[in-house]
Length: 349
Length: 126
Image (cartoon, rainbow over all chains, first blue to last red; front, side, top):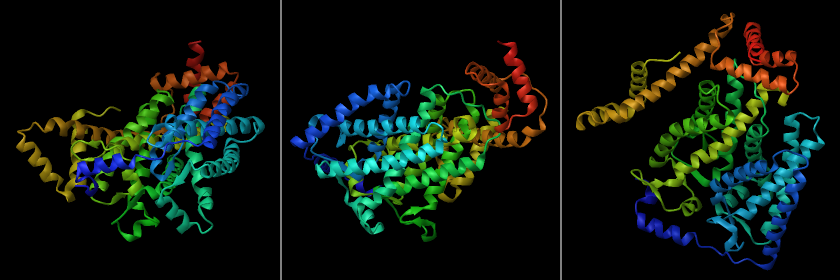
């Protein structure tokens, strides 16, 4: 049995203790929160002049940011925002709205200013502009005392990026943004009612390449959350990212996308999206459980502290193990599908 | 092509035996069925069917792609072609020319005869 959950009462007690943190907001933090909310209230009507159905797009983007915040929650802490600011543990809806309006504003304005450019060029511009903005606002929330990082994240940053944590951000921020913007762009196709060409001949290797990029970069980003141990040395390609774990995830994502796209050919991208996640879940879940129970995946102390304390009956693993799968694959799949759709639909490029 | 259920179950069973053999999966299957007087088959059979269905569907998918170029003549309308036609109608409504629509289809592997058949039907259901 998985060692962390062998004593259930002790585990639940430790969860209760570790979920307590300082929620008392300072005046400067309250001013910051008001600034964020005002920015949302002012920018949404402005953005509605430049793009259709802006509210839906904002909701989708906020959902993408929230999904990301949920599953990377143990990597960073958001304290002192006031009891009103939290929706789950230390995840704050105010920060979610703030990141979302910032990302949406940049996307809308870049699309407008560079409307004659190719989609991949605009995507690159989003990343450059947003990386600068995220670094700026991240430094503000750190200075205000809201944001701090888990020791595992600090360790990775200090050990592998000799220029300090801010240099590590140059990897984490673009990857996070790519996944969230990919998620937003995928759903925007539906919101904007884009007409997608039915495909006869699939580009298998391009799809495999996209899946490999998405899964591999994602694995590196969430690396501080768990240790992959006890696998053959040759399989480790970067820190504890092992090919023996990563390759099956890539193949499952690739197969799910191709299988669902062919079998649900006549369904829209909304239905297909849940098809991908269902397919992925039924294959990934048992494999992941097997890795955890055999001790090959060991969660970091902060991930364990983030667990709600509810366990999956029968296997005594935290329910988060099951819930996290559709969450993080939602971002990976949306990213892969968005680029795949662009490859097939030249007019959208 | 739709595979018979028995074939899916058989393929799923073979896949299970091959994958689980090193981990004692054969004994586990045998014991679970015998000790429950066969009741465990309620779980095993749908699971085998699902795995077999996925494998056979993927097989169909690959073989369909590899033989698609040989089928040049127009086929009767099916679900796929209905999607094809809806695409044409939406593109036309958005002001896209038939030439551009044809080009978009060709870029994703449709043959001239497929495209002609779809345009013909799209015109007939205006």
